[in-house]
Image (cartoon, rainbow, N blue to C red; front, top):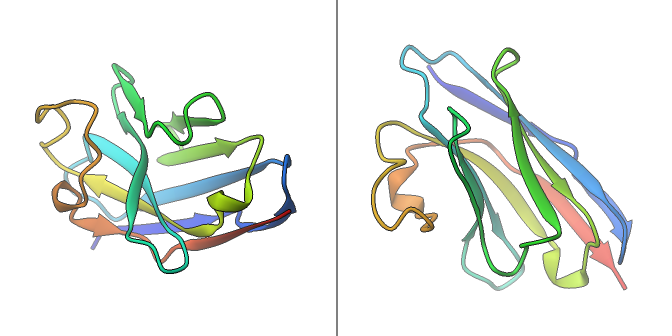
Length: 129
């Protein structure tokens, strides 16, 4: 059974940084795509960033481009989300998700919930002004 465990959330002031981690275990087929989603208060869940596990591409939502960086350590089966210049509107529960065989579905830049069957429990990020 696949498990995704996020960590690294917390409370920071605007302009601060956090690094989220997601450890993936228990898979028999390695995910080809990993992503971070978030759901803020009274908001729908949105895709933040995704990466092909070969490293061939990474995409970001416009709202986080230039501030967030998604990376991975394939030896540790871990993906990271480095979040800099945080804003109050980044406040949300952040979820890690894994996909199998859908990473090349067009458009490549789309980060769609429906293509990610496995999810972590989430880690809370709160940014105060």
